[in-house]
Image 1 (cartoon, each protein chain N blue to C red):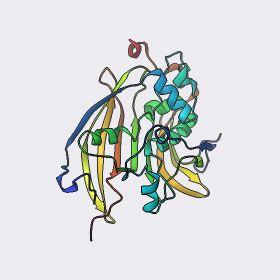
Image 2: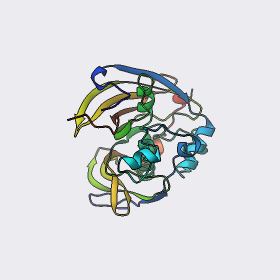
Image 3: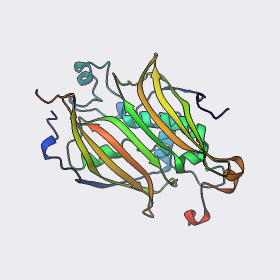
Image 4: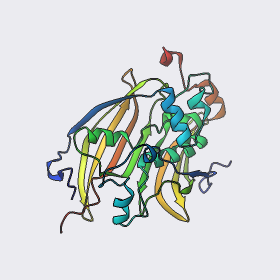
Length: 148
Length: 144
């Protein structure tokens, strides 16, 4: 993959699932309550920010690898009618900027999103360090010190 | 306006938490199943021979609601924006502790929001993630 502005990440296609929708009943004023959200103009109970964050995170782990866990930052905004249980979505991203940061490492900036039927109820930005190959081998995610 | 959380009584700087949870192997398995994200790093170990690590988005965008819910009835709240900075890996089996504070509050288009800034720490007290979440308190608008 060419790491340059304009390059699109390979999207992940997912069926949204929120376990708590199956295991618990939400209150009558909760956005996770189907009736309440429909009364307020939504297609149905809204999926939580947590579930959507996890979908975007998966995309970014695939791109950055383990360095995402020590260098990744992302900011997501939830807009429009949200997303519902069972929706099929595409999670995507495009590189907007690349900065060399020494020893073969590059800081990569992206726009990211979750899309359903051509609409993006989740939009945001992300950045992380893409490690040079040699460095990634000599800088393990875990150190003996950390493991104790 | 939120019938459950009195917007006027929320104070900037108000401390929230701490709130802790242990990330068991079963919890991680459930995460991997629910997100259909079975990265071996979470289930069998890292590429450098390290132990399984907790998915970096574990509880991201959820800890803030747990923290707010310790003080207020947060049952009607909604995530509007979520922002996270990953700092360190954490081993499966560890207990994570979140704490935070109310950083801002504002009204936009008749809707009430608070901004919760929080950190999550591992058992050694090292911060593994910093977060900032904009939370809509309710779909009920402030009377104009």
